[in-house]
Length: 203
View 1 (tube, rainbow, N blue to C red):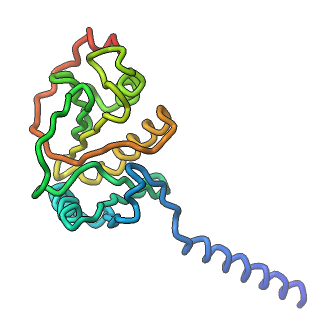
View 2 (view 1 turned 90 degrees about the vertical axis):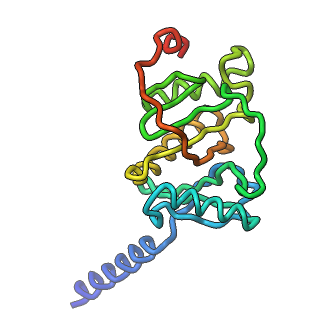
């Protein structure tokens, strides 16, 4: 009888432990301008049905003098990104050199005017940009000026978390920090030609 008592006690303790672990909130791995985190409003990607809806919510948060924080889960890890941006009602045009940017639309990368690459080239391209240090005038001048525009089609919103996960992993691996600048935006669809060999050889 004592044997069964100890067995039941052990199972009760084990179930209690597992229950606590399951209910324990996952730690959020934050990226972006974390100095603004105290002003942030969490926006969970799962709560949005379209990319346009997400963009409108981001803008509305910026326009209330708060900072949106995009929260998503991928591979069992919670991540958050404080995006680059400002309220559309007060935002002013500013000069931005295209060599300091990349655009990611669905599964394609748009770099420096008319060069397009598949998404699996992202690590090579980001490394070339972020480690350039003004050596090549065609690539990013400085990591502090590096801006990544991200867009997905309405029907591909579920893929956004995967793209953000890859972006943050690559940036952190190259720079050993989390100050990635990502702006969510809509850009015109461009026909995707094969990447020019002369630029691919640079990477």
